[in-house]
Length: 242
Image 1 (spheres, one colour):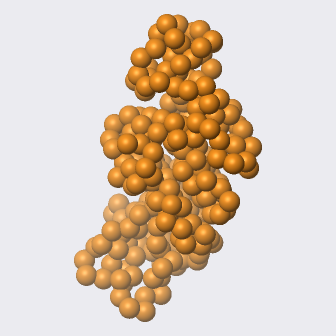
Image 2 (image 1 turned 60 degrees about the vertical axis):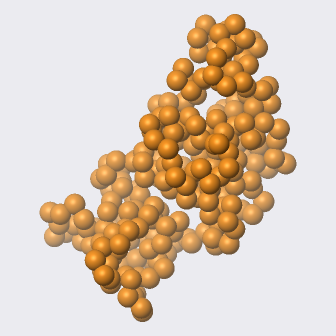
Image 3 (image 1 turned 180 degrees about the horizontal axis):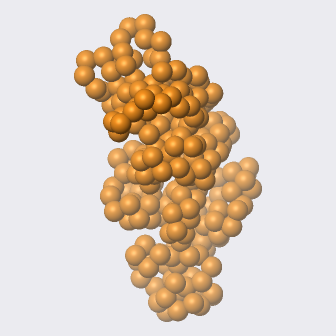
């Protein structure tokens, strides 16, 4: 066995036997890994809350021939306390972790995806930011990283740049009045999508929740689910996709 060390975000955990847990962590150098945390469910465990989801950790682990590594040491870098104290922020963060868990491949590094998650959790940890809009922007960014960026500048059917009034998920973006199908798209939502995808998220989040935000939340949820070909359990609690 070889000992390794990395930093990352705990995505989820599940039980193993009577006292252990399997911990899924998105790490910088090794990608998504699965580790056994031995005795973590026992009272007085030295790991305990250090390996809960939504925790930024520095973790050491033993890697052998098995797909499962074994945790040997954990230091907490950030617990995102403001997220944990607010139900809406917790729900938004869990939806983001679920998306990363679905997108990331086991043992394949994806530093851009991890950094996107770390930045998004940092923003979500700010009590002044709208959690649902942060989650929506995160989904759109992940789609972009995964090569599925929605087209919002031109009609995806004919290339027209004027009067984009609909959004079709299977087509992959906005449609003009002549080609429209799918769901209606307001001018406010279109403008907000363009700002987020164009790198203007900071300005969007620094002001009051803008018009069109509910539409953008719904579009981001459905676009992500279609991209992954599955419904996301936690994201439906956001109230934006149904």
